[in-house]
Length: 374
Image (cartoon, rainbow, N blue to C red; front, side, top):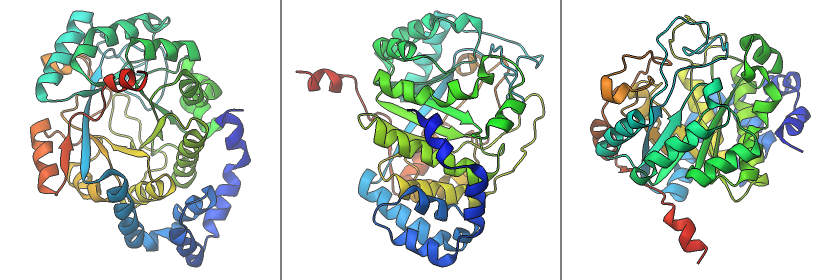
């Protein structure tokens, strides 16, 4: 059994009908629950719950402080390649887009990594498109081996792999995975992915299961908000994380909340998600899985990101560039999408301190694994 089987228990039509019929009393019951069930989570994502954002936010803040203290963990992405063979209609790396393409050499990767290290980061996220150059995972494994002396935590946000591929990543030094399903609607998924390996909905959906089987320390999920309807996409994202947290209890689960940003190709959101809905998703996710790491990237504005710090967010990116080689040469290669919050890592750290939080640059070290095995 995988999440592809679990999701079938919750048909989208049924989800939307239940949300539409959710009452204020049902929302209050969910808010009072000591441990939320998926049905409680559904209630907190319903339109009726928008009238309860303040008590949701207060409880989410309380739970987050209890579980995580007053820290915000910082990380930054390093784009290794924008070469891709997929036709994802919403992505700037779409193989049909006529943009300059580049895959960094290992020397270039190390140069980028050193710059990021010098900023103060000890947690990094590696990203790449899906291309034949990546077929045997050797490029990515060698990149990890090259930079791991600089970082205590290396995560990947790349194409889905089989279990052996994820085991190869673990052996190389990867400890975290982020993989957006993009949309949990299989019909819409097919429409948005007209060609390429990514067209296989189920293979992507089951990738976090394979990562759990491979023993990755952290597994992160998310939907690209703005594709499918907010209510069902947010529900399935939380349900996915809830499933992973129970099935692969040795791994830490994280949830990301990416909204579509402008990119080459001019794709416009199909179902735009407003700020209130995003706040609703963050708070509901915190209450559903109190120990989940919640990520918010530089896709969002500085003002909005600052306002979400007390509501459950535990990890924030800073100093981001979505083009390969962007840190060293200011991104002459085309970016995947346009970021919104362009504050430097130092500026971000200062804002976090001003908000009464502590900016953490390192929260994990592979030495912990060695110590636990002694």
